Amino acid sequence: MSIFASGEPPPLAPAARADAIRLGRVNDLLRFPDGFLFGASISAYQTEGGNSNTDWWWWEHIASTPCREPSGDACDFYHRYGEDVAMLAHFGLNSFRFGIEWARIEPAEGEFSRAALAHYRRVLEACHERGVVPMVTFHHFTVPRWLHEMGGIASERFPSLFERYCDRAAAALGDRIGYACTMNEPQGLGSSGWLLGINPPGHTDDRDGAQRAVDNLLEAHRRGAAAIRARAGVPTGVTLALPDLQYEDGAVPGSSSLELESKVSDWFFELARRDDFIGVQTYTRFRYGPEGPRSPGHDWSDTTRELTETDETTQMGYEFYPEALGGAIRRAHLTCPGVPILVTESGIATTNDQKRIAYIDRALREVLACLGEGIDVRSYMYWSLLDNYEWALGYAPTFGLVGVDRQTFTRHPRPSATWLGSVARAKVLPIYGEVARSAAGAGTEPVQSV
Ligand code: BGC
Image (cartoon, rainbow, N blue to C red; front, top):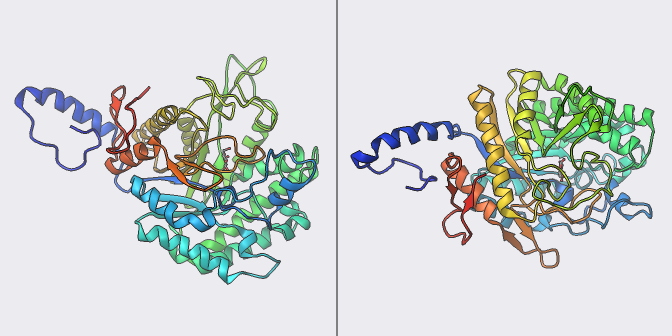
């Protein structure tokens, strides 16, 4: 019998019954609750293409840019959203997280584009037509060029300008939005833009700027979330990058950039206690010993770090460690008890799609374990639906369930897409250690869960 089969199982011969009872119990443990959202995420800037009115476009084109290549047309998602949403639904996924680009919606200060808002409404409609719940991110790293020129997120005007943008976008789109994420991973933006110089505006060691940016982001989330709720009444929250920080052999927490980010996350958690959900995102763990960092790729701010994939690491140079998701969910739960958790990003950059399936499989087992502990987890959104443009690195890593030909923009779904879609349809994971089948017709090799 297919492990993905839904509905009533066929009658069993008596000899098979004892085993079936045992497997039935196992299956219950591997079952996701009704209403659980399985989906994939993208951001606007990394997929739409042509976002020339943003700070990142400026950053990609200055002589000292750390970016290997400009984002250019990216995946041309701006024009191809219809086929992409249809494809996601066809896999069996029931939710899609995408971003709206502030620079398109408000191309000049105080001037709002009806055409851009109408465009995003069409993207939302495409989701509804396919039975896909849309999760919308209002800010995913980029700001309009005019705002960048007045200081970006470190400008004292940032919180009120963000509030107004949220208000206008929620007024135009809110009735079609399923879940609203005010900001993506704001915990890292102060340090990456003002201390480390790896994001616009590219300042280094500007402690005042970093502090202003963090204070403004906190205030902007508070005000933006209130505006979205007031206008549209949709569940609203913030998404945080929560790598699993593990201290071993008596190591004590230090002040690496990752650990500073983690402290900023605690401030966002304070606000999130009053939110409708908390968005959890994680990719790996970082281990620390008394001698210092023990994990490969631990200095994720070093854009020249080794990006070679091995059996133990991913294309991003991180340790292959899907179990980080359990650590991130438990941290969010302990810090914000009672607040529902959405896994808004979890993923792996790899050239080996079987490894991607193994990663998702193990990450989903972590979600099930957390559900079993009584934690209210409501979604698993894989990053990314498409092979996206990667911040400061250019096109190199392949995160996608779907490959994208950069010349023709042709989409090439990978076996992992149909595999995750099959799990989503059945709401059950294959039994651990058993051969996980790709969806029928995918024409792919069977995959051994690891
Ligand atoms: C970000 C994405 C990014 C991904 C992989 C996440 O932190 O939200 O924009 O592409 O990590 O680096």
